[in-house]
Image (cartoon, rainbow, N blue to C red; front, side):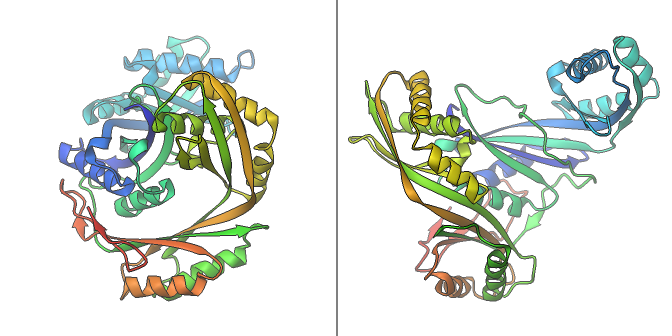
Length: 420
Protein backbone atom coordinates (compact mmCIF):
# COMPACT_ATOMS: atom_id res chain seq x y z
CA UNK A 1 0.00 0.00 0.00
CA UNK A 2 1.63 3.24 -1.16
CA UNK A 3 0.61 6.89 -1.33
CA UNK A 4 -1.73 8.33 1.28
CA UNK A 5 -2.49 5.77 3.99
CA UNK A 6 -4.71 6.17 7.04
CA UNK A 7 -3.24 4.19 9.94
CA UNK A 8 -5.90 3.32 12.52
CA UNK A 9 -4.48 2.15 15.85
CA UNK A 10 -6.96 0.14 17.98
CA UNK A 11 -6.14 -1.24 21.43
CA UNK A 12 -8.00 -3.16 24.11
CA UNK A 13 -7.06 -5.33 27.06
CA UNK A 14 -7.41 -9.04 26.37
CA UNK A 15 -7.16 -12.31 28.23
CA UNK A 16 -6.21 -14.46 25.22
CA UNK A 17 -4.96 -14.44 21.65
CA UNK A 18 -7.34 -12.72 19.25
CA UNK A 19 -8.90 -15.09 16.72
CA UNK A 20 -8.73 -14.44 12.99
CA UNK A 21 -12.50 -13.82 12.96
CA UNK A 22 -12.17 -11.15 15.65
CA UNK A 23 -9.43 -9.40 13.70
CA UNK A 24 -11.50 -9.67 10.50
CA UNK A 25 -14.42 -8.08 12.33
CA UNK A 26 -12.31 -5.10 13.33
CA UNK A 27 -11.08 -4.75 9.74
CA UNK A 28 -14.74 -4.78 8.64
CA UNK A 29 -15.61 -2.03 11.12
CA UNK A 30 -12.77 0.16 9.83
CA UNK A 31 -13.65 -0.53 6.18
CA UNK A 32 -17.28 0.43 6.76
CA UNK A 33 -16.33 3.55 8.74
CA UNK A 34 -13.96 4.84 6.04
CA UNK A 35 -16.22 3.85 3.15
CA UNK A 36 -13.72 1.53 1.46
CA UNK A 37 -13.66 -2.07 0.26
CA UNK A 38 -12.02 -4.78 2.33
CA UNK A 39 -9.34 -4.99 -0.36
CA UNK A 40 -8.30 -1.45 0.68
CA UNK A 41 -7.64 -2.57 4.27
CA UNK A 42 -4.81 -4.57 5.86
CA UNK A 43 -3.84 -5.10 9.49
CA UNK A 44 -1.20 -6.35 11.89
CA UNK A 45 -1.58 -7.36 15.54
CA UNK A 46 0.83 -7.03 18.46
CA UNK A 47 0.46 -7.79 22.17
CA UNK A 48 1.78 -5.27 24.67
CA UNK A 49 2.88 -5.56 28.26
CA UNK A 50 3.58 -2.31 30.06
CA UNK A 51 4.59 -0.91 33.41
CA UNK A 52 6.78 1.63 35.16
CA UNK A 53 10.20 1.84 36.79
CA UNK A 54 11.73 3.79 39.62
CA UNK A 55 15.16 4.96 38.46
CA UNK A 56 17.93 7.41 39.25
CA UNK A 57 19.36 9.12 36.20
CA UNK A 58 23.01 9.99 36.89
CA UNK A 59 23.83 13.67 36.45
CA UNK A 60 26.79 12.82 34.21
CA UNK A 61 24.61 11.48 31.38
CA UNK A 62 21.69 13.02 29.54
CA UNK A 63 18.21 11.55 29.41
CA UNK A 64 18.47 10.16 25.87
CA UNK A 65 21.68 8.31 26.69
CA UNK A 66 20.02 6.80 29.75
CA UNK A 67 16.98 5.71 27.74
CA UNK A 68 19.23 4.06 25.14
CA UNK A 69 21.08 2.20 27.90
CA UNK A 70 17.80 1.05 29.48
CA UNK A 71 16.41 -0.14 26.13
CA UNK A 72 19.60 -2.09 25.43
CA UNK A 73 19.49 -3.69 28.91
CA UNK A 74 15.84 -4.68 28.49
CA UNK A 75 16.46 -6.07 25.00
CA UNK A 76 19.37 -8.16 26.28
CA UNK A 77 17.50 -9.40 29.34
CA UNK A 78 14.28 -10.22 27.51
CA UNK A 79 16.07 -11.47 24.37
CA UNK A 80 13.97 -9.36 22.02
CA UNK A 81 14.82 -6.66 19.43
CA UNK A 82 15.27 -3.17 20.88
CA UNK A 83 12.70 -1.93 18.32
CA UNK A 84 10.02 -3.74 20.35
CA UNK A 85 10.65 -1.57 23.41
CA UNK A 86 9.40 1.98 24.04
CA UNK A 87 10.58 4.08 26.98
CA UNK A 88 9.20 7.45 28.13
CA UNK A 89 10.39 9.57 31.03
CA UNK A 90 8.19 11.98 33.00
CA UNK A 91 10.32 15.12 33.23
CA UNK A 92 8.64 16.24 36.48
CA UNK A 93 8.53 13.02 38.49
CA UNK A 94 11.39 11.17 36.81
CA UNK A 95 9.20 8.07 36.54
CA UNK A 96 9.94 5.81 33.60
CA UNK A 97 7.12 4.11 31.69
CA UNK A 98 7.82 1.19 29.39
CA UNK A 99 5.90 -0.81 26.78
CA UNK A 100 7.16 -4.09 25.34
CA UNK A 101 5.69 -5.59 22.18
CA UNK A 102 5.33 -9.24 21.21
CA UNK A 103 3.79 -10.96 18.22
CA UNK A 104 1.75 -13.45 20.29
CA UNK A 105 -0.28 -13.33 23.50
CA UNK A 106 1.71 -16.11 25.17
CA UNK A 107 5.00 -14.39 24.42
CA UNK A 108 3.65 -11.19 25.96
CA UNK A 109 2.62 -13.10 29.09
CA UNK A 110 6.13 -14.54 29.36
CA UNK A 111 7.69 -11.08 29.00
CA UNK A 112 5.35 -9.66 31.64
CA UNK A 113 6.21 -12.44 34.08
CA UNK A 114 9.93 -11.90 33.54
CA UNK A 115 9.57 -8.18 34.25
CA UNK A 116 7.63 -9.01 37.43
CA UNK A 117 10.35 -11.21 38.94
CA UNK A 118 12.19 -9.79 42.01
CA UNK A 119 15.58 -10.32 40.35
CA UNK A 120 14.81 -8.08 37.35
CA UNK A 121 16.25 -4.97 39.04
CA UNK A 122 19.60 -6.62 39.67
CA UNK A 123 19.66 -8.09 36.17
CA UNK A 124 19.03 -4.73 34.48
CA UNK A 125 21.62 -2.89 36.56
CA UNK A 126 24.18 -5.59 35.82
CA UNK A 127 23.49 -5.33 32.09
CA UNK A 128 24.71 -1.72 31.87
CA UNK A 129 26.82 0.27 34.29
CA UNK A 130 24.97 3.49 33.49
CA UNK A 131 21.74 2.17 34.98
CA UNK A 132 20.43 2.72 38.47
CA UNK A 133 17.06 0.97 38.56
CA UNK A 134 15.42 0.77 41.99
CA UNK A 135 12.17 -1.00 41.13
CA UNK A 136 10.01 -2.36 38.32
CA UNK A 137 6.19 -2.43 38.44
CA UNK A 138 4.65 -4.65 35.74
CA UNK A 139 0.99 -4.10 34.85
CA UNK A 140 -1.23 -7.18 34.98
CA UNK A 141 -3.11 -6.48 31.74
CA UNK A 142 -1.98 -7.54 28.29
CA UNK A 143 -3.16 -5.16 25.60
CA UNK A 144 -3.89 -6.24 22.05
CA UNK A 145 -3.02 -3.63 19.45
CA UNK A 146 -4.50 -3.93 15.97
CA UNK A 147 -3.00 -1.52 13.45
CA UNK A 148 -5.30 -1.22 10.44
CA UNK A 149 -3.96 0.47 7.30
CA UNK A 150 -6.50 2.00 4.93
CA UNK A 151 -5.82 3.14 1.37
CA UNK A 152 -6.30 6.89 1.83
CA UNK A 153 -6.88 7.51 -1.87
CA UNK A 154 -10.11 5.48 -1.72
CA UNK A 155 -11.58 6.91 1.50
CA UNK A 156 -15.05 8.27 0.72
CA UNK A 157 -15.94 10.04 3.98
CA UNK A 158 -14.31 12.71 6.11
CA UNK A 159 -11.56 11.39 8.37
CA UNK A 160 -13.22 12.97 11.41
CA UNK A 161 -16.53 11.22 10.73
CA UNK A 162 -14.76 7.90 10.12
CA UNK A 163 -12.85 8.19 13.42
CA UNK A 164 -16.10 8.90 15.26
CA UNK A 165 -17.78 5.92 13.61
CA UNK A 166 -15.00 3.56 14.70
CA UNK A 167 -15.15 4.92 18.26
CA UNK A 168 -18.93 4.59 18.48
CA UNK A 169 -19.10 1.07 17.02
CA UNK A 170 -16.25 -0.36 19.07
CA UNK A 171 -17.36 1.34 22.28
CA UNK A 172 -15.56 2.47 25.42
CA UNK A 173 -13.71 -0.83 25.87
CA UNK A 174 -11.49 0.10 22.94
CA UNK A 175 -9.06 2.97 22.41
CA UNK A 176 -8.55 4.11 18.83
CA UNK A 177 -6.59 6.79 17.06
CA UNK A 178 -5.96 7.56 13.41
CA UNK A 179 -3.10 9.16 11.54
CA UNK A 180 -2.66 9.92 7.85
CA UNK A 181 0.76 9.15 6.36
CA UNK A 182 2.41 9.16 2.97
CA UNK A 183 4.34 5.95 2.39
CA UNK A 184 6.46 4.59 -0.40
CA UNK A 185 6.20 1.03 0.92
CA UNK A 186 3.87 -0.85 3.22
CA UNK A 187 3.72 0.78 6.69
CA UNK A 188 5.34 -1.08 9.54
CA UNK A 189 3.30 -2.68 12.27
CA UNK A 190 4.88 -0.49 14.93
CA UNK A 191 3.24 2.97 15.20
CA UNK A 192 5.15 6.14 16.02
CA UNK A 193 3.69 6.36 19.51
CA UNK A 194 1.36 4.62 21.91
CA UNK A 195 -2.07 6.03 22.80
CA UNK A 196 -1.95 8.36 25.80
CA UNK A 197 -3.72 5.82 27.96
CA UNK A 198 -4.32 2.08 27.83
CA UNK A 199 -7.43 0.31 29.14
CA UNK A 200 -6.92 -0.47 32.83
CA UNK A 201 -9.17 -3.51 33.17
CA UNK A 202 -9.32 -6.88 31.44
CA UNK A 203 -12.35 -7.27 29.14
CA UNK A 204 -13.60 -10.29 27.20
CA UNK A 205 -11.77 -10.81 23.94
CA UNK A 206 -15.09 -11.30 22.13
CA UNK A 207 -16.13 -8.02 20.54
CA UNK A 208 -19.16 -6.27 22.04
CA UNK A 209 -22.68 -6.40 20.63
CA UNK A 210 -23.95 -2.98 19.52
CA UNK A 211 -27.24 -1.92 18.03
CA UNK A 212 -28.63 1.55 17.47
CA UNK A 213 -28.14 4.66 15.36
CA UNK A 214 -25.51 7.34 15.13
CA UNK A 215 -26.05 10.62 13.30
CA UNK A 216 -23.17 12.76 12.09
CA UNK A 217 -24.10 16.39 11.41
CA UNK A 218 -21.42 18.50 9.75
CA UNK A 219 -22.04 22.25 9.83
CA UNK A 220 -20.15 25.02 8.02
CA UNK A 221 -20.38 28.79 8.03
CA UNK A 222 -18.12 31.77 7.35
CA UNK A 223 -16.88 33.45 10.52
CA UNK A 224 -14.92 36.51 11.57
CA UNK A 225 -14.58 35.42 15.21
CA UNK A 226 -14.22 32.13 17.05
CA UNK A 227 -17.37 30.32 18.08
CA UNK A 228 -18.14 30.98 21.73
CA UNK A 229 -18.81 28.30 24.33
CA UNK A 230 -22.40 29.55 24.43
CA UNK A 231 -22.86 29.09 20.67
CA UNK A 232 -21.52 25.56 20.88
CA UNK A 233 -23.70 24.74 23.90
CA UNK A 234 -26.73 26.04 22.02
CA UNK A 235 -25.98 23.72 19.08
CA UNK A 236 -25.60 20.73 21.38
CA UNK A 237 -28.82 21.57 23.28
CA UNK A 238 -30.73 22.03 20.03
CA UNK A 239 -29.51 18.65 18.78
CA UNK A 240 -30.51 16.99 22.07
CA UNK A 241 -33.98 18.50 21.78
CA UNK A 242 -34.42 17.68 18.08
CA UNK A 243 -33.38 14.03 18.50
CA UNK A 244 -35.02 13.58 21.92
CA UNK A 245 -31.85 12.31 23.58
CA UNK A 246 -30.40 12.69 27.04
CA UNK A 247 -27.61 15.17 27.88
CA UNK A 248 -24.26 13.63 27.02
CA UNK A 249 -25.60 11.93 23.88
CA UNK A 250 -24.22 14.67 21.61
CA UNK A 251 -20.51 15.32 21.13
CA UNK A 252 -19.11 18.28 19.21
CA UNK A 253 -15.76 18.80 17.47
CA UNK A 254 -14.81 22.23 16.14
CA UNK A 255 -12.23 23.21 13.57
CA UNK A 256 -11.63 26.25 11.40
CA UNK A 257 -10.75 26.33 7.72
CA UNK A 258 -9.05 28.54 5.19
CA UNK A 259 -9.31 27.82 1.50
CA UNK A 260 -7.88 29.06 -1.77
CA UNK A 261 -6.44 28.06 -5.13
CA UNK A 262 -3.06 26.66 -6.16
CA UNK A 263 -2.12 26.62 -9.83
CA UNK A 264 0.65 24.21 -10.77
CA UNK A 265 2.34 24.19 -14.18
CA UNK A 266 4.25 20.95 -14.69
CA UNK A 267 7.28 20.17 -16.84
CA UNK A 268 5.80 16.74 -17.63
CA UNK A 269 2.42 15.08 -17.16
CA UNK A 270 1.50 13.25 -13.94
CA UNK A 271 -1.62 11.42 -12.89
CA UNK A 272 -4.21 13.37 -10.92
CA UNK A 273 -3.82 11.15 -7.85
CA UNK A 274 -0.04 11.52 -7.87
CA UNK A 275 -0.18 15.30 -8.11
CA UNK A 276 -2.92 15.67 -5.49
CA UNK A 277 -1.00 13.50 -3.02
CA UNK A 278 2.18 15.46 -3.63
CA UNK A 279 0.37 18.78 -3.31
CA UNK A 280 -1.21 17.80 0.01
CA UNK A 281 2.18 16.89 1.44
CA UNK A 282 3.86 19.99 0.01
CA UNK A 283 1.28 22.38 1.44
CA UNK A 284 1.32 20.60 4.80
CA UNK A 285 5.11 20.84 4.95
CA UNK A 286 5.12 24.50 3.92
CA UNK A 287 2.63 25.69 6.57
CA UNK A 288 3.76 23.12 9.18
CA UNK A 289 0.52 21.21 9.67
CA UNK A 290 -0.28 17.50 9.50
CA UNK A 291 -1.23 16.22 6.00
CA UNK A 292 -4.61 15.12 7.38
CA UNK A 293 -5.39 18.82 7.91
CA UNK A 294 -4.97 19.57 4.20
CA UNK A 295 -7.56 18.62 1.58
CA UNK A 296 -7.57 19.15 -2.16
CA UNK A 297 -11.30 19.45 -2.76
CA UNK A 298 -11.00 19.80 -6.53
CA UNK A 299 -8.33 19.66 -9.22
CA UNK A 300 -8.61 20.52 -12.91
CA UNK A 301 -6.02 18.58 -14.91
CA UNK A 302 -6.13 20.87 -17.95
CA UNK A 303 -5.72 24.19 -16.13
CA UNK A 304 -3.65 22.84 -13.23
CA UNK A 305 -5.85 24.68 -10.73
CA UNK A 306 -6.44 22.95 -7.39
CA UNK A 307 -8.72 24.10 -4.60
CA UNK A 308 -7.17 23.56 -1.18
CA UNK A 309 -8.74 23.51 2.29
CA UNK A 310 -6.52 23.77 5.38
CA UNK A 311 -7.96 23.06 8.83
CA UNK A 312 -6.81 24.23 12.23
CA UNK A 313 -7.95 23.94 15.83
CA UNK A 314 -8.33 27.70 16.33
CA UNK A 315 -9.35 30.68 14.22
CA UNK A 316 -6.05 32.45 14.90
CA UNK A 317 -4.16 29.42 13.59
CA UNK A 318 -5.97 29.42 10.24
CA UNK A 319 -5.71 33.23 10.04
CA UNK A 320 -1.94 32.87 10.26
CA UNK A 321 -2.02 30.11 7.63
CA UNK A 322 -4.18 32.27 5.35
CA UNK A 323 -1.67 35.10 5.62
CA UNK A 324 1.29 32.78 5.12
CA UNK A 325 -0.18 31.21 1.97
CA UNK A 326 0.14 34.58 0.18
CA UNK A 327 3.87 34.87 0.89
CA UNK A 328 6.64 34.07 -1.59
CA UNK A 329 8.40 31.94 1.05
CA UNK A 330 5.46 29.52 1.20
CA UNK A 331 5.27 29.33 -2.59
CA UNK A 332 8.98 28.55 -2.76
CA UNK A 333 8.58 25.85 -0.10
CA UNK A 334 5.72 24.28 -2.05
CA UNK A 335 7.75 24.32 -5.27
CA UNK A 336 10.75 22.75 -3.54
CA UNK A 337 8.65 19.97 -1.99
CA UNK A 338 6.83 19.25 -5.26
CA UNK A 339 10.08 19.01 -7.18
CA UNK A 340 11.45 16.53 -4.63
CA UNK A 341 8.44 14.25 -5.11
CA UNK A 342 7.34 14.59 -8.76
CA UNK A 343 10.13 16.38 -10.63
CA UNK A 344 10.62 19.80 -12.19
CA UNK A 345 7.91 22.45 -11.77
CA UNK A 346 7.57 25.32 -14.24
CA UNK A 347 5.46 27.56 -12.01
CA UNK A 348 3.29 27.60 -8.88
CA UNK A 349 0.93 30.38 -7.87
CA UNK A 350 -1.23 30.58 -4.75
CA UNK A 351 -4.39 32.63 -4.31
CA UNK A 352 -5.88 32.45 -0.79
CA UNK A 353 -9.62 33.02 -0.40
CA UNK A 354 -10.32 35.95 1.93
CA UNK A 355 -13.01 34.21 4.01
CA UNK A 356 -12.55 31.82 6.92
CA UNK A 357 -15.08 29.24 8.04
CA UNK A 358 -15.99 27.22 11.12
CA UNK A 359 -16.65 23.50 10.83
CA UNK A 360 -18.65 21.80 13.59
CA UNK A 361 -19.09 18.03 13.58
CA UNK A 362 -21.87 16.78 15.87
CA UNK A 363 -21.89 13.07 16.73
CA UNK A 364 -25.32 12.07 18.06
CA UNK A 365 -26.21 8.79 19.71
CA UNK A 366 -29.72 8.49 18.25
CA UNK A 367 -30.41 4.95 19.44
CA UNK A 368 -33.50 6.11 21.36
CA UNK A 369 -34.71 8.65 18.80
CA UNK A 370 -38.24 7.86 17.63
CA UNK A 371 -37.86 9.14 14.04
CA UNK A 372 -34.29 9.89 13.00
CA UNK A 373 -35.29 11.29 9.59
CA UNK A 374 -37.82 13.70 11.09
CA UNK A 375 -35.38 14.79 13.80
CA UNK A 376 -32.68 15.41 11.19
CA UNK A 377 -35.04 17.50 9.06
CA UNK A 378 -36.15 19.49 12.12
CA UNK A 379 -32.60 20.24 13.22
CA UNK A 380 -31.49 21.24 9.72
CA UNK A 381 -34.52 23.52 9.27
CA UNK A 382 -33.68 25.31 12.52
CA UNK A 383 -30.13 26.16 11.43
CA UNK A 384 -30.16 26.16 7.62
CA UNK A 385 -30.35 29.96 7.41
CA UNK A 386 -26.96 30.40 9.10
CA UNK A 387 -25.19 27.13 8.37
CA UNK A 388 -24.51 24.79 5.46
CA UNK A 389 -25.40 21.37 6.84
CA UNK A 390 -24.70 17.80 5.76
CA UNK A 391 -26.10 14.93 7.83
CA UNK A 392 -25.50 11.20 7.72
CA UNK A 393 -27.17 8.48 9.78
CA UNK A 394 -25.66 5.05 10.36
CA UNK A 395 -27.88 2.22 11.56
CA UNK A 396 -26.06 -0.86 12.82
CA UNK A 397 -28.25 -3.62 14.26
CA UNK A 398 -25.51 -6.21 14.10
CA UNK A 399 -23.04 -8.24 16.15
CA UNK A 400 -19.52 -6.99 15.77
CA UNK A 401 -17.89 -10.34 16.45
CA UNK A 402 -19.35 -11.82 13.26
CA UNK A 403 -17.15 -11.70 10.23
CA UNK A 404 -19.98 -10.50 8.01
CA UNK A 405 -21.23 -7.08 9.00
CA UNK A 406 -24.39 -5.64 7.53
CA UNK A 407 -24.66 -1.89 7.78
CA UNK A 408 -27.43 0.27 6.41
CA UNK A 409 -26.63 3.89 5.73
CA UNK A 410 -29.82 5.76 5.10
CA UNK A 411 -30.79 9.36 4.72
CA UNK A 412 -33.90 11.40 4.00
CA UNK A 413 -34.53 13.34 0.83
CA UNK A 414 -31.75 15.59 2.07
CA UNK A 415 -29.48 12.55 2.39
CA UNK A 416 -29.16 10.11 -0.55
CA UNK A 417 -29.82 6.45 0.32
CA UNK A 418 -27.20 3.78 -0.11
CA UNK A 419 -26.32 0.39 1.36
CA UNK A 420 -23.12 -1.50 2.12
